[in-house]
Amino acid sequence: MADSKTITICALSTIDNPFDPIDDYDKWFSYDVSHGYNTSNWLGNLAKTSDLLSNEDNMKEIEDAIDEIVNVDPNFYIKVTKQMEK
Image 1 (tube, rainbow, N blue to C red):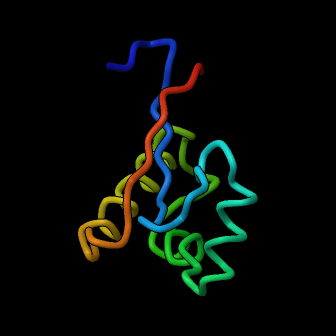
Image 2 (cartoon, helix red, strand yellow; image 1 turned 90 degrees about the horizontal axis):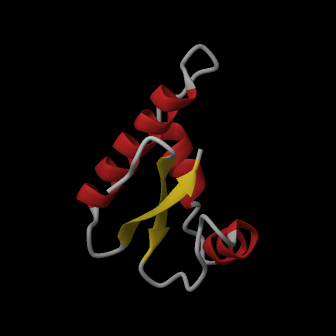
Image 3 (cartoon, helix red, strand yellow; image 1 turned 60 degrees about the vertical axis):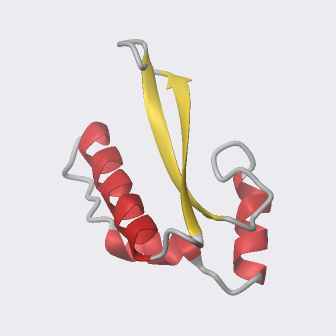
């Protein structure tokens, strides 16, 4: 359970990508694009982020988009989470 000193970071990945999109994004991204998935583009198009929103609101928009994508294809996409210090 997260406390007030930590936040939960969410990312989207595919079940076959061996790299962590949070800790090893460059390798994760390279694998994703080389397989033609373009997961980041799909997530970016779906998440309604804005410079006018707070960081917390933008993170919520991203998480909602991740959840929507995972719901569309739960056998291929996965939600990756990690607790991090604020």
